[in-house]
Length: 569
View 1 (cartoon, rainbow, N blue to C red):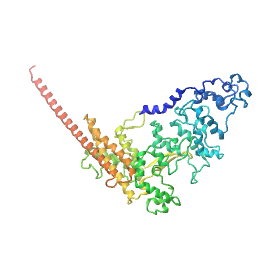
View 2: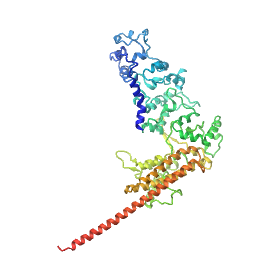
View 3: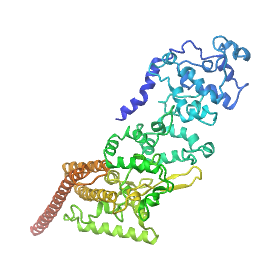
View 4: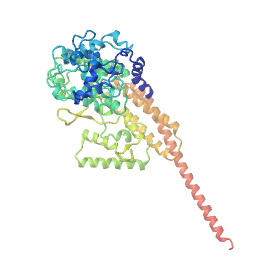
């Protein structure tokens, strides 16, 4: 897969290089422009660096030079005659100089909108960039005289433009957010711009995205298929998806979730709410009176499938915390059966007492510090990631979670009830609560009951899988072969991932896909648990056999020693 990703990134570059400088082979790189602008007697600082920067430019790599964009007579013999070199009357290519910002799209479009010209360098070249730009928010604002908006050079640079597949390009996937953030994260630049509802345009989008599951996948895991700004908003035709189209954007990658949602009763509910909410003055409280949880929602102005629950730029990896119907501690998800499946198969008493002591010690520490409620749940999530039982010894840094526990946290989605990001306006860290089922659905409502059912069923699968995992760890450390049992555990974990997708059916009723998949997961988890118990039984048998063997060997050694002492000297 990594090789395919590399190929996808580098293939356009390979093709372009294969075409070579066919379009510019007759252009001598030593031109009047280069000779003059590289002379330190005339230029210094940034002005002198232009020639050096352009040497790495994509245009230079295909044989183009200064005069191809700016016009003028490139004859090197004219390097000392500025008037002739920059002659506007030069018939072949009159000197045009540098355009004003409002003219950038047309300036670049002279070549990039010319299909015949562009295909000299790349037969598959796009030639609609300028046209698409003029349909974007940037292009429309520019047409109305706003010279602060981004144009071609703001995103691509000027004299050091790299191919988009070049890791140093300003539009390489891992750098797109920084490029967009040059404007969109700057409060001064964005001052005066408003959303459709009249609120100031936010400047925290990039910071939110960096903390999101998408940003972490791209920046930390180097997954070049993870979405960044232009994957959702477009690039040359950049326009924020409307509330009625954002699901189509998300559905490009999350197709199964989109299909399940659109077949669920939630789709119709959202459509109905969208009609009612248009004239709402005080949020959900216009229709829902206290003590219903919806009454407290005063900022909701639209229902738009994915974004309503997951947000847009702050899309974190969903966890069980989104349901809202949580046990008092996250520890319970893996360690406390509470009357659920598999309780009759007791864990080893010693391990149970050890867990309960550790849990009670943590609760006592939290109590002494005044941590309670959801803050306690979130605090315990962090503490669980640092526990010696869950981590490997630190080697020059923070202890890392052992792979088996990291998998349980990752696949079973043990997470916190909030996300954090840095507000560019204040520089302060903002803690933002997640949107959860309980924000709209009371415990006694059908939605609340469905959320509680989801949490309860997942709890069952987590507990049973967690017990099997701990047993198998002990058996493996003792040298017992457990590969076949691990297959059942892996299938149980995979089923949990499927359950998280099936949440988008919004049904846990009898006969639902969710319950059918849950039953399948429990079957695999039960098989893994029983297999792990058998593995522990074999380990105990081996240990007893070893003790008996050692006792027997010791007896023989003692008998042999006594026999030797009884022999005559």
